[in-house]
Length: 365
Image (cartoon, rainbow, N blue to C red; front, side, top):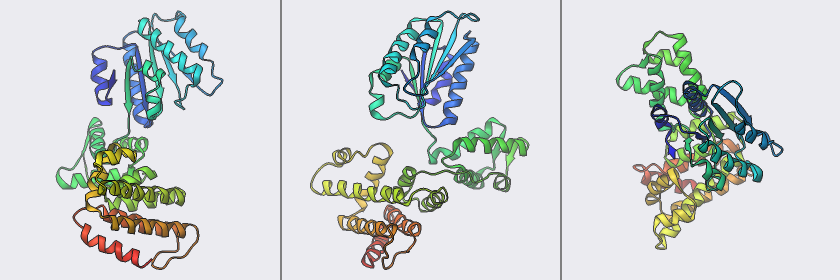
């Protein structure tokens, strides 16, 4: 049975199952979910807890089986917690996990909690994960940027604080979100800091601005989403953050140019009469990225995409030390300019004017 993270508390209120699997890449939410499960287990008599961390190929899986098969000396019920930081149990581990799933479902004195990182599609389709899925599985994803202000407001409310009503409060939450984007654990710490600095009640923008540090962390995949969404201010912040963190220019350029190539391939397929959903699947464009492509592609002509592709080619040369007329000589500045061209092109209402801008920039190359 698969549960959404928001459903976990209500589910636990109805009683515990015997097998839970948490998988995701957000440490704060994984930790909080596991803590909630452990607390509920203690309340229901699972007083003993044994923790096993799979540390490599030589991990002794028999120790986990032995723990499940042995009687506890101190409690009638025990919680067995198994952590797989790599998400790769290996051949032996895969078989043991399937056995553990059967044992946990049959033995009411054992509660099995398996903690995994974010899993790829192939792993989610594996036999061992299918066995774990016979219990309760919870995918613990991060908080998307659009939902981050509301998440912050909810956390503030838990500690008895709130922002000002109206537009000023929204501005405050957006400012807070900009400062902590991509770093949920630090965001949680900044929220707790506000509880230490100020009394419960309403927080002003000035109070939040003085207290909240800039702890945002970015990755190139989120940069891709921001560029395709046409979020120019956010793209500028993310590029500056990636540069400050020492991200490789080549990786950033690859991400931007791969978006252009994917857009062009899908556009060419649609121009040849292929339905867009089919063209998107063939290019492995899924989920939120698929929605962005569907919004952007109708605004772009094949010529426009060729111009963006030519611009990406020039920036590739700049990164390798070549000079190009009309382009900055520094790689990061050239990446900024390329990202702005793409993001502006993805902004719907201004598309005609910006298409001319992109065309003139490409002509200058």
